Length: 212
Image 1 (tube, rainbow, N blue to C red):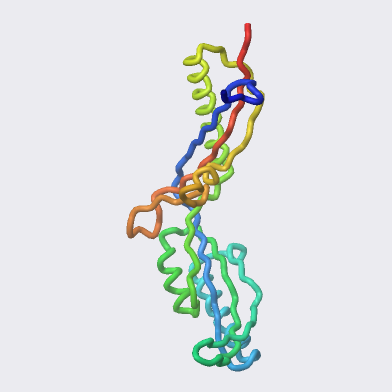
Image 2: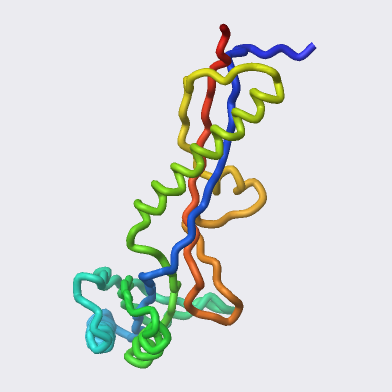
């Protein structure tokens, strides 16, 4: 016979999501230059970084919305049939935030033309994510309470006070069969700007069973 170690009440898990149109985009990209000496690599990369910064400013992106790493230097080798030294690669990484979603495509075109070597990612987001997360958490709590009331009514018992509240990561639970961000983007095919951003929350509530 199956034994329940601590039979104390009703435990329920619920999730909720809210949607909002994106009002922010983050671009992540790299500028790299390969030269035969470290000095030449630093000089070439510095020139390219300057050109990219000018291209970004031309799109009215504030300097405070641009994060750039320090220049890094590493040797490059070709590991084919025989090991061959290619030179020194100097690289800087950029993360740029913009609130002009209609300008994203042209901004990407211009930073590539200015000397960007690799686009790492284009991520749409919302500036009021804490507010949306709070709304989703309130909805998750309400859904959990309705679920617990249903179980109690069908079981013929009376729902008591909440004795346990546990914040959950809804994506971690779903991660057994898929992996996404908890603030994920839903977009139509072929559309660079998504229709909305989805922010999710989840909660586990433990209720006591009231005894008259």
